[in-house]
Image (cartoon, rainbow, N blue to C red):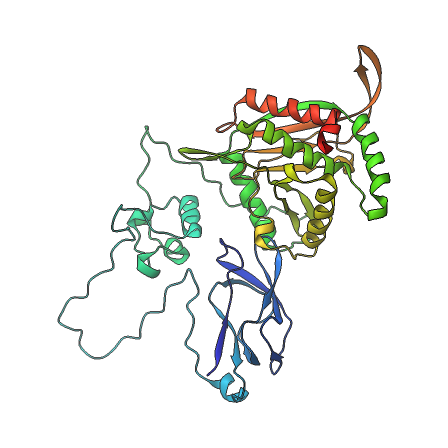
Length: 425
């Protein structure tokens, strides 16, 4: 019988995506493991592999279709030996995408049954009265000021989904806030104001929408504290040159960024109070330092992760970063390679930026912003001289990290960079 190929969930938080491109056509034979399509999630364009063998009987969702819900039938596969035309014309039950309720049945001329039909109960868990709602529904409800407890969910087990919140009536809106409980500030939708100036308009990609949302949430919800230190780079640059000469036969060339990734990871291990995550009524302390490294790609910004960077050699970090950055630019990273991390590093030195303050990448507790190394007047051994100096600024989540602890991390980072043999010891 025909096999329904459905929109997959390519990350734990994915609820919809863009079917960017089909790599197969109707009539093509596919085997398990064959690449069938490219799907754009909120962070990357990922390849979708076939699970079953057969012939593509029909394509239900055209290439370029946006906001395709997870679980939507996107193609029909005819099994081996099955008539392709028959499979294509077979009746396929319409798929109700996640976040939408099934259409109501057509009205009937027959009288209604005498027994009353029970109305669905609000979406509350039976044991602890928690509201059951999808993350997307919760976010929309918060933006619209809708009270989820007054909404009846249409999803499985009464789960509130996107369509329930979007269709909420004014009666479901939260009661007017009292003086003791001020309403949260909700940003108004941004509307274009072109004033008649010639312009072009480009539709935002899923990645750019996610970047905009997450950075807005970070600046609104996370109290940032910024700490800056100036760091002399001459010893690090000298060591890098010596290491690159030794590693040249292996085809490895270290960047300054590779050494800074190692320095940040070791600093976080030395100052564990900064290797943390704020989680409401809990403070999560991590036992290793996974460093998310900001990489600019055509679609925006992505942060591939160097796992346990503190215990890896700088040559291993260099090789891993080249691989991660290359696949990031090609949109080939797996979700686990860019989701997570205990802290981030963002380096804009290559653009000549002297100093900047980076936005924390939630739920992480800190991010290190690296400026350009440049020749500056600098006091060395009590005498004024000229040295290669860079400015590094740490952004810390003040809910989880006190200023004194952040200062200790910045001191540890400065000490390691200015005495870089500790990075290879």
